[in-house]
Amino acid sequence: APGVYQLASLLVELDASDEASRILCADALYQMGRVEEAHRLLLLALSRNPQRSPILVRLALLQLKKGFMYDGNQLLKKVIRIGDTSCLLPIMDIFKDEDRKLMQTHCHFRALTILKNKQED
Image (cartoon, rainbow, N blue to C red):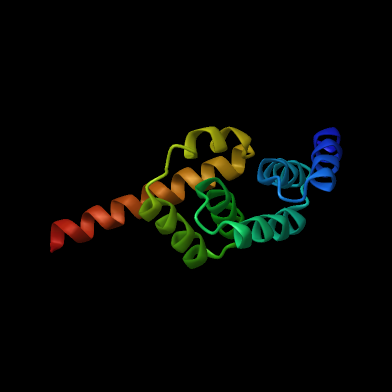
């Protein structure tokens, strides 16, 4: 992760508009346990392109990790509204095991709640 971070940081310095390098940099920061820095970098990337599902999903995980369930839910809802959920599985490979389980459990229970509420209606 440190080497990936250094390379991605260099790429961002060379081209500040390179979103892929910025995301790679955030992923490396996350892997190194520097969650707050990753969060700030993702927020910056999101401000440039608010409809990018890969950024929204990463931010949702970081919000869930911090215990901000409502914020995490809102970000996941936005991903679903955008309709680009194809990024979810590849991104899950980036997450640490405990965070992957957190995201899977959270999504599973939210889906069950939604289904239960629809059945009651």
